[in-house]
Each structure stands twice: as structure tokens, then as C-alpha cells.
Length: 85
Image (cartoon, rainbow, N blue to C red; front, top):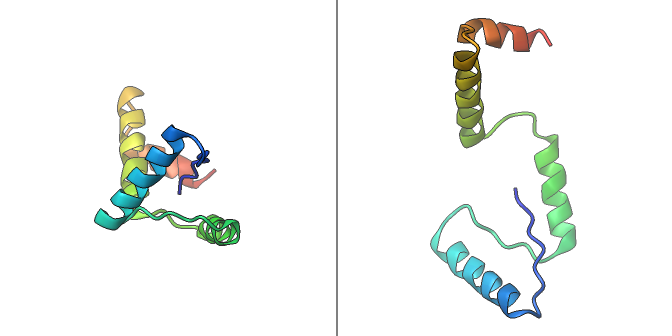
């Protein structure tokens, strides 16, 4: 989740909000939340979940592979080291 604070009174802010609204209609995964209470509830819910979404998991594993490759450490060894911490 990303929070972007936009000044709706400026031309740039109006353009950004309108673009976001159009994208939210066309693409899934984009949602505009204008109510602070709803935003706080979503943030609490996301903070309470202990699992990674598929994209986050893939990115995390790719980062681990890159780290292991740069340090010449077998990926299994790196994963076992992380799980003990």
C-alpha cells in the first residue's frame, strides 16, 4: 500500500487525482481512498497480516538470490541462516 498526499487545489494535484481515478477504473489493484478512517483501517489490517503477497514474495526471493550470488553463498545456506534469526 502506498499513500500519496495530494493538494487538490493545485493544477498538478487535480491532474494527478483525475489520472488516478481513470487508472482505478481501468486497472485492478488501484484504489482511491479519500476517507481517513477507511485508510487507517486498511493500514491496520495490512500491518496485522504476517504473510507476503505473491509479488512481494517473488521480489523478496529474487533479492535473496541476488544477495547469495554476490556473496557466493548457496541460497539454501542463506535461507537457513535467516530462519534462525
